[in-house]
Length: 317
Ligand code: NAD
Ligand code: UDP
Ligand code: UDP
Image 1: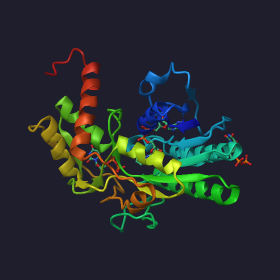
Image 2: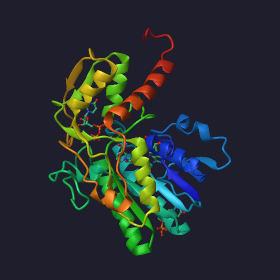
Image 3: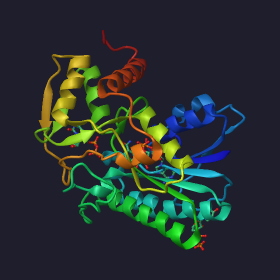
Image 4: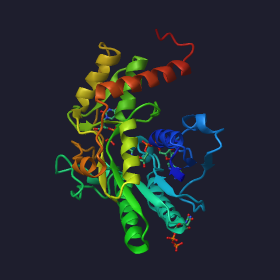
């Protein structure tokens, strides 16, 4: 098949492309390199079945594909809040353009939505039926309301234009290739511990998240795309940890003497988050296989090689 991956030079997109290329598909990677990087897909650049297109999805583009994985959107709060109006445009105008494209070429279209559509959830764990508790005017709204409109657009193109959609609600995902300066909690803590600086814990660290290793997540996306169920489907790991527990794990794995530094909790930071994955289990026969400790070790190894490569004259022992 010919498969278009928007946001393909990013963290999840590049891992997805590795899987699709290894399955023998032709892949079009579309990215504006806002948070993605060429090095993530460098190993495919000379491959005859791979094509890289530098393009911003807020502008229309005509391409042909059988399937579209629509991932283009900054995912870390630091990045999506840097230019919030642009984040809304990417989610709304960008998703509209990609749905228009899918409609024109009759491609199946998978939207990478997010657990953020549940906001600061009053239902725990979160099921797909829960409609969420989202602040429409807060600093996270450009992303979470943006994704809610993206879901609305996907379902309206499905109802109105018969576009064959799939909607994944992705929960916190981590792994190799996350940006060192990404601002998300796993990348922050790992990079800080490796650099010997204090680990930043926001608030008292009692808020919870559930962390899914990237290879598990990619498997879920591919199953959803190629199955019959349109969604929405939660994709995430059910093991829930407080941020303090996560920081302690990172400390133990990298440097038990590393210090913790408590910083203010950002506005609208969800207090707890854990997916109910009954739908994914039943309808996609999918569940995560990599426990946090194992995934963290793989992530740490990747960060270690990047950090030591970028500081050749440092005295890191
Ligand atoms: P990422 O920031 O690494 O990747 C996003 C990619 O989209 C980047 O390569 C970026 O350059 C590109 N992009 C952004 N705006 C664009 C635009 N206007 N036009 C073209 N390309 C653009 O993030 P990620 O973690 O790989 O997330 C991928 C998708 O999964 C996002 O849609 C995100 O909302 C969703 N998601 C991720 C997580 C997670 O924990 N990583 C959780 C929930 C949802
Ligand atoms: N679009 C695109 N590529 C395509 C087809 C459409 O970027 O191959 C854009 C198009 O420019 C429009 C949006 O997708 O802004 C929605 O397209 P649709 O055909 O649904 O709506 P219309 O063009 O009728 O407003
Ligand atoms: N967080 C933290 N230290 C950091 C970065 C984040 O304690 O250096 C917290 C953040 O406040 C949130 C959780 O970790 O409660 C997850 O943050 P992240 O940005 O990774 O994802 P999201 O909030 O979008 O789930």
